[in-house]
Length: 120
Image (cartoon, rainbow, N blue to C red; front, side, top):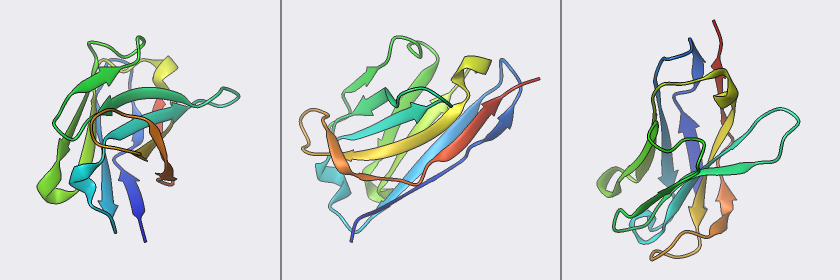
């Protein structure tokens, strides 16, 4: 059974940083691309960043230059380093296991989400 568990969310002031983690169990983590999404209240879920098995990354325009996705295949964990956070980054953040390894396409497995709130 595949499980994804996010952690690392919280309350941070504008300009601050957080690092989210997503631990994956029950699957061959290293063979799948992974993605981070977010969903703000009243808005659709949007793709924030993705990473392939071999480390190629893509970012949404709103987070380019501020967020960094990475992965540790030995730990079956994907990370999202978020810097220069702004109030518009406030959302629930979810990780997702992709369908293949060579490019990211959203798969069926999601974590429960972790809340990120950016406020003074």
